[in-house]
Image (tube, rainbow, N blue to C red):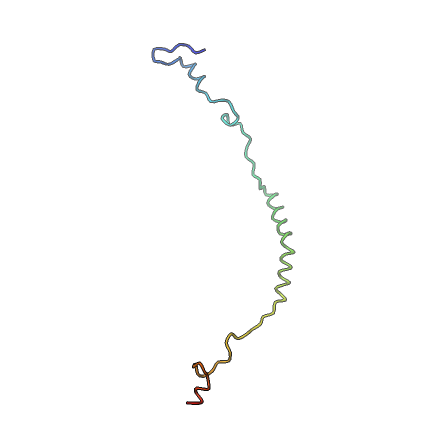
Length: 95
């Protein structure tokens, strides 16, 4: 039960201190457990080596496939002519 207000319109100081406190929780009292990193050096090393072992067979397959590639050279145009007219050499021989 609250005490009656004083001449300033407020209850005494001890009552104010009790009514304006936040609810008790582990968050407000900063009692939460400390944050622990997920990637410790050991976990990061294991994950890195695991991924390396996972991709090693893929690298071997790609390397072997690249060694069997054959380079083929083809000309994009037919043999060049001396005359650039649509009929080619016939026009030059007739003229």
